[in-house]
Image (tube, rainbow, N blue to C red; front, side, top):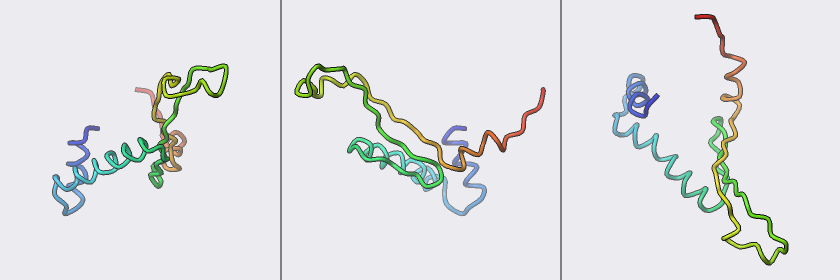
Length: 95
């Protein structure tokens, strides 16, 4: 589902304008980016949490570890209880 589609669906069930809905959908992303960049875990209530993961080159001595030792970084998502329930709540059928 795209952001535009999500906005239209939300707009059907409330009195808030589409522009305000889009702003509210983007705000957590902007805040999460800043928070992760500062090395802090982002907890998104029932949705789950985001954290930054780093992978380093192995160094022989601790003193050899510096910013150039970082091989790559990625953002890890840990689903919250509502997302974890999806597989058991989903019904499948042959098509």
